[in-house]
Image (cartoon, rainbow, N blue to C red; front, side, top):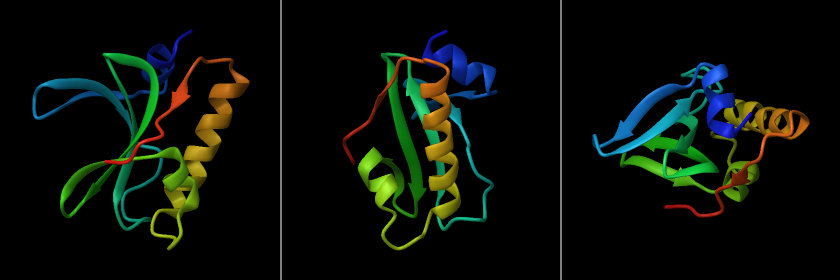
Length: 104
């Protein structure tokens, strides 16, 4: 099973950015527990890269794995716990993936 199939099995929803960039989005924590809405995403053109997506007042941001794990001010602690568990689940199930290392 590949990453996209695994995301679909976990009930990821199909979405797009500005109607142009299709991806699968999976929310890992409940809205309201953290300051910003966060989710993980996998894009069609990079089917093995796992992205962290975060919606702030300025709009959608891509957050690196390192920044997600750092969580220096505890504004997304619930998401971080769920994210770490999900990544471990991928490893346990031998799903091939890489973690996004860029923030923008």
